[in-house]
Every structure is written in structure tokens, then in C-alpha cells.
Length: 227
Image 1 (spheres, rainbow, N blue to C red):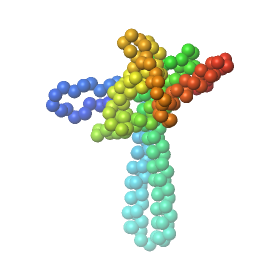
Image 2: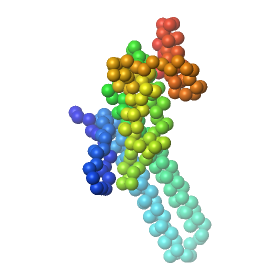
Image 3: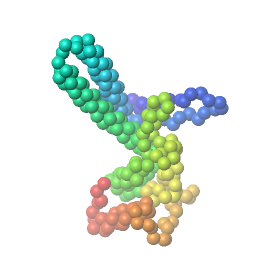
Image 4: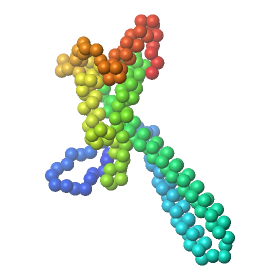
């Protein structure tokens, strides 16, 4: 079965040729999960609208029946306000989940064709997880002018697919990849030599140096680092 793909809708036509938007390939399970979440969001929106309309109808009815006790109106108002607050909270939760799923899918797509550093599958998975954690806070999911979900670099607003490619191909991230992989390796298949100067605490180089040091320590004792 071929895998479905998402692609951002084309913006309004403008003068001059436009580059085709990048496609995001997802597995069937990922696609179905995103579709389910988006359907749930749509249902919550409809429920919110129905609650607003029902509240307005109740208000008009109460005004027409002025003989009713005011306390009844107050209780009815509080009931609808509570339902509206619950629907709003549920919508926000689902929206955050959809945004997180979309960002994770785009980052996973950027890893395709890259061989992470590590002698075993477990070590390579641990390296990939570390790279994901280093990247994820620099990107966000938002809606464009047409309302479609897009993933972009937080600092610049660039398309995530373009920004991720540049970041992963940079020498700074080359230490995470095997020499034969993309990700900043030289044309001869070798990685740039390590910077002999000490890294600033908290910098990417310092984090990586600490991580690689711990891997070497584990291996010297015959242990495998856990991801």
C-alpha cells in the first residue's frame, strides 16, 4: 500500500513561477492518526457553535417569559458557560496534540536518508532521539493565511523542511552522522575535525562532547547506553 502524503495548499496565484511545496510522507498509521485528530477538532468546533446558538435561543426565550424567576436564568447561564469552557479546553488540548504530531512528522521526514552515528541499532536510535530533542524547540506548527497547518522555524519563519535540511547539513551537526551519510560530511566522506578549543558550557558542542564521553564510558565497561 502506498503511503499518503500531506502537502501545503498552494497560495493565491502571483506573478512569476512558484516552486512546488514540499511533500511530507507519512505512514498509513500516522496519516490515520492525524486525520482522526483533525476530525475531532472539527467536531469540537461544531459543538462550540451549537452551544453558542442554544445559549442565545435560551436567552431570547427567557426575555419573552419575563414572569420566570431570575434565579432560573442565572443557573441556565452558568450551565452554558461551564459547557462552553469545557468545550474550549478540549479544543485547545486537541489542537496542541495535532500541532505536536505534525511537527514530529516533519522532523522525522528530515531524517530520511541519513545514517546516525552508532555501532548498534540502539545507539543509532539514541543519537536520532538526541538530535530530535535539540531541534524540536526551534520549530513550531501554525496556520497560514488559508488556515492550513504549516511547520516553520520559530526564529526566522522559514519552512521547516528547508531549515531542517540546512541545520542537519551543517558542520555543527556532522558529529551525529556516520561518515557516509549526509549532514556536513566532507566530499571525501570524512567529517570535519573536532574543534580543539574547549566548548562553552551548555552549547551544542559541549552537550555532544558530554554525550559521546558517556557512551565511551559505558562501552569500556561492556554496557550499552539507554536511549
